[in-house]
Length: 128
Image (cartoon, rainbow, N blue to C red):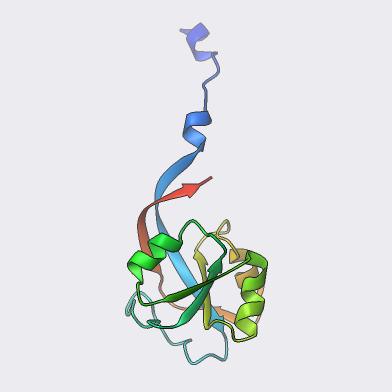
């Protein structure tokens, strides 16, 4: 039994992707008229609004399914906050976790606020 326990276990099949329940949050400028929106209470509140997301982000299709009225505009991740500040979009979105594209920049920006609530995406395969 001890010999069996000391064998290395191949982890590569476990590392590729997992299925999670994810929440996608939206940040806006603190002086925006959108700051009072609660996405959980009214998921359609941003309908027809231009929302920035990272270029080719893996969650775009899932976000389009749960919030079909959003106009998603893709930017390189480091250009999302500048695009919001320059008025190219009315908000920016990412997964609500530190590995979400742009998440740390959104949290660190003093002139941005996260809207209450989130868009819930089920069964999204997330690259690890």
